[in-house]
Image 1 (cartoon, one colour):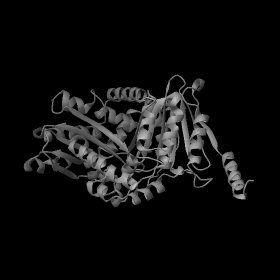
Image 2 (tube, rainbow, N blue to C red):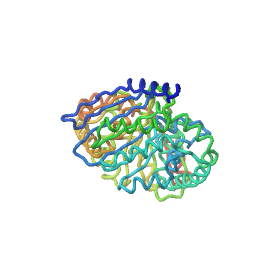
Image 3 (cartoon, rainbow, N blue to C red):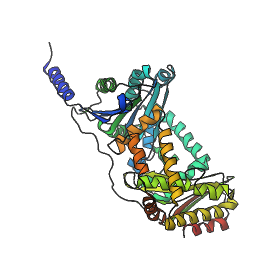
Image 4 (spheres, rainbow, N blue to C red):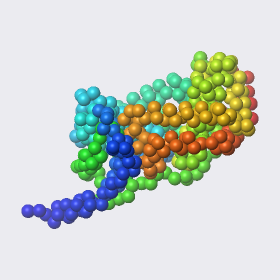
Length: 459
C-alpha cells in the first residue's frame, strides 16, 4: 500500500521532471563540438560538449563561490572547504574517493579562485559514469567531520607556507592587496595563518550549506560524452543524495557589477632575503563582461604576451635585465587588473621599472604599430585554439562560461571577435587602461635607499 506522502512525492518528482529544459547552445558539424545545456527543475545546470573522436572525458562541477564571498573572519573558508570535500562522504572514505579514480588511471583535482570553485575528474570515456558518481557524491554528501577539519588544517598551513616561500607567487597576492586593500578581492584565496587557525568545522559546514545548493552549481562535461546520459546520471546522483531542497528553483544569475574598485599610486614592499626582487607594476583593468576585453587581450599580448612582445624585447632581449618578464590581465565581475611582472637582481629593480613604465606610457600615448597588432591578433587566435586541445580545457571553457556569463561562445565566434579588433580599438583601450596612474608591489632584499626610490615608478 502506498502512503499519501509517497504519492505526493512521486507526483512532485513527476511534475519536476516535466519542466526540465534542454537547449542546443552551439550546433557543431556532424555533432562534433555540439554544446547542449539542460536546466533541471531544482535549479542545477548541466552543460556538455561532445567530441566523439576522443577517448577521454572530463567531468566537473563549478560552484558559484570564491574567496570574495568570504567575510574577513572567514578568509580561506572556500579553499578549506575545497580540501574537505575530498575527505569523505556518507558513501566513501577519503581513500575510497582517491582510489576509485586512480584504479581507472584517471586524474582528479580541484581549484579555488576569487569568484568560483571547480572540482573535476578526467577519465576514459567508458569510466565517465564512475567520475560522475564520485564527484557528485563529494559535492552533495561531504561529512565535514571535526577530525578531518583538524587534520586538513595542517595541510593548508603547509600550503600557505609553500606559497610564502615562493616570492614569485606571493607577489601576486601582494599586488591584489595593493590594488584592493582589505576588500575581499584583496585578501589571499588561501587565507592567512590566523584565519585558517580560527576556522571551525561548524562555521565551514554553514558555509557549505549556504553556497553548495544546486542553484549555485554548474555541471560541465566534455569529450566523448552523450548529453542525455550525463543528465540522467547527474540527476540520479543528486536526487539520491536529496540535494534538491526545492523541487522547482531558478539557477543563481551570474555576478553583476556591484562596484568598481580602483586605486592609484600605491606602493607596497615586503623585505625578504631572496636572490631576486619580484615586482608587479599595474593598474585597474577591465571587468570580464566589458566588450573591450577582446581589444585588451590583443594589447596585453603585444605588450607582454610572448618573446616578440615589447616588454620581453626591451627588458630581456636588448638589455638582459630579467629572465622572466610578462604582462597579464585578470577580469572579475565588476572590475579587473592589468599587471606587468618581472623578476630581476635587486640592483636592477629601478632600471627594469623605468623601462616598463616608459613602455606603458608610450603605448598609452601613441598606441601600438599596425604590425604589432596584426602579430598579436594571430598569436592570440593561435593560443586560443591550442589551449582548447584537450577535454579538460573544454570542460573549463563551457563550465566557466555558463557560471560567469550565462552563455556559450563557439571557438569560431571567439576567433572572429579577436579578428575584428582594429588598431583604433587597441589604441582606445590602451589610452584608458595604461593611461591610469599605476601601483607597485615588490618582494625582495631592497635596501632603504632603494626602497625609498620605488615611488618614482608610480609618480
